[in-house]
Image 1 (cartoon, rainbow, N blue to C red):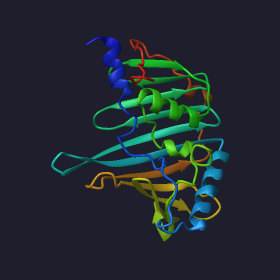
Image 2: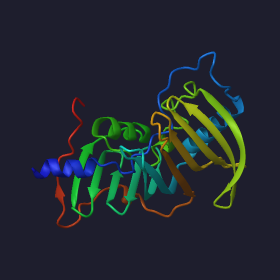
Image 3: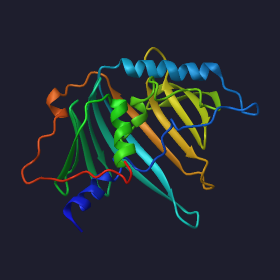
Image 4: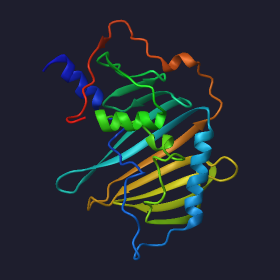
Length: 255
């Protein structure tokens, strides 16, 4: 196998496990659709506005997902991610699991994917927003950024008019913090989100259930926040480690 193709396959493995995205495209509600609670929709909008107003932060997550075998048996997998953000267009993410470690750097001019174990890296020129970046990586290269919805909520890329049902499910403590619990149905996905109560409506937990699969596999993300991180701007620019090799990141067929 050629080095470029091998590296592309390695780097194109999603930075996160194959978990469904909450903001999936969905047909508009019909007359028989369940009720949409306007207060639940407003809670999403308030959270999105708050997220878009954050200028600099670190977010970490513990991810749990399920893979369904041909006979219906489920296999659970776990991973973790740490993401540093400086709005509007700088990001560094490190995704770790027992199988691999992947890193993503974006400094507003170019995005670089790095595989520390193989010391392969691929760089593509890009200058868009973070929402545009995560969409570009997924659609063109098949690379999913952990917690990608954080960059979409509060933007035109995450409209609420496709939500078929929305409800307030009460309150729970997540990591010791009181949160408002909301449940939504959107296309073939059911998803739940726990948003911190009070003046800082940050998402603390996200659960997604795939109804397109009879086994109903779920993904769970527990989310922690640092709103006053101490990282320097230099972390967003990739500097090739000694002995690393640059390889081509190949686009998906037809992209």
